[in-house]
Length: 343
Image 1: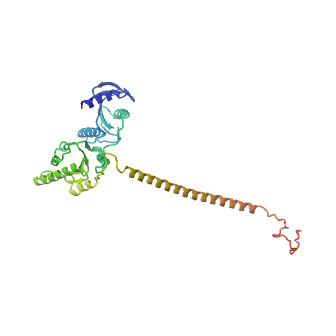
Image 2: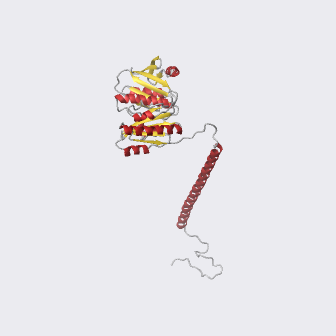
Image 3: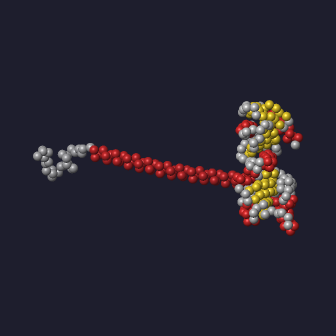
């Protein structure tokens, strides 16, 4: 934590003193103050985290806090990689950085907030340049992203939804991530465990805990299912069928990575080479075919035009004959004389 504080201070001093039409007038610890050309003042807090996922976690928690005051607050794809804007606050993450901008005086619009956020965002490294994959695996991801709360490297989930007793059975041991989204048909929680064994152990505890809650008549998930290394919960759905339909939309995409050298590297390279050569061959055959058809078509068109032109020329020219107008020479003297006198 102390190291991150020092880094934040360094980054604040490293930010440009003039970002577009804004000017830095003060810097105190992990907080700086900017003033716009029209005299509006803004406090800027910048934090550098250990990963892009941690930065997004801070953004989602800040959005949830702002949403408690204004239910219309939604996370969008700007500013930064993702962020949100309210009447007096703008927050975003970009790479491993989380930035929170607060207007020090009430404002009639958010133009200055978003302009300052964009100016500061352009000075930060983009990192992976994307939101965590777990958010994209939620049902209706485009809508879910707007209000999803994301937690990285969790140990427990009791703080995320204290009223849900089933979450006491979830033990992440710092090797799990979670995302909770509120949809029109219910709340969906996905917990991703980093190993199959951890997912299996938690699945057993969760299933047993749900059975226990049913027997005690206490609130329990409308539906629960393990999907790959995901544990998927649906809360507050109108019925079990609707909850199961939400779970059906969750797809677990397995990613395999080698800790050492990939033993199939030569086979993969050979397959890529074969695919590339086949692609080149197909492209050459297609190009040759198109060229042949084009040549034949153009040649036929030119030939037809030339033939038509020559025919028209022949019709326009008077026929000339050195045989007295006859179609054949009278070499055998069998054809009588032809008189050319007018009668």
